[in-house]
Image 1 (cartoon, one colour):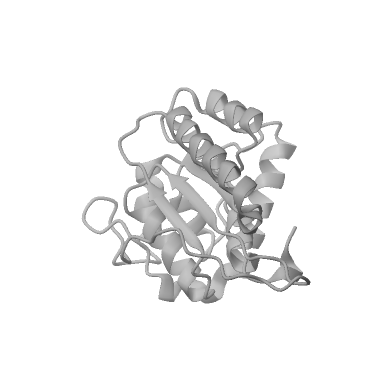
Image 2 (cartoon, rainbow, N blue to C red; image 1 turned 30 degrees about the vertical axis):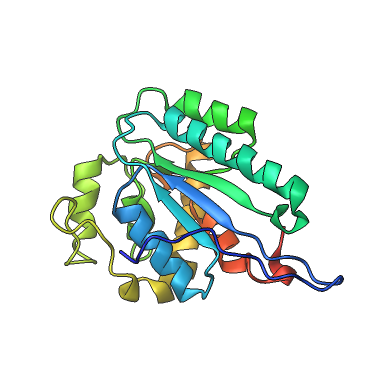
Length: 215
């Protein structure tokens, strides 16, 4: 994984320019998600991504709580420095075997914290780069299936993706991910297994250093 990043300084913008924003991302994964997010940000030449891996929390509600605390801190800073006003804080977590995922998602909505969510786990996003998959699957089976496309990946020995094999397939992954959400919605199981919406966060990373792509 790349060296830990610190919150970058924002250069003073001209009166007509929109200040660039920093995106702080809290994720429950210790290696897979941080490595991918930093590799993705590097590929899109966006240095303003700060990943906060919080492995071992055991409950995504705790992750949302940490994200809210950081978001509140940034809002206080923005009162003193308007260039911080565009900064965002996100959460990234999986369905996995968490019992209170619904509570965590509701807490995030109530706290105005955007989330990237994968079901059953983040590896479904990686798989969507290479193939469409539309049957319910558990974490272990998905991780095994992914090795057909990323042979160096192993969930315990080497839990990182080879971004070089994925970076040119982003459009395919995004199309498959959007389809997964539509399929689950059509079944009356929003964000069900399998599905992911992490591309919303990734689109922000791609566009956050380009004012013309802002929301």
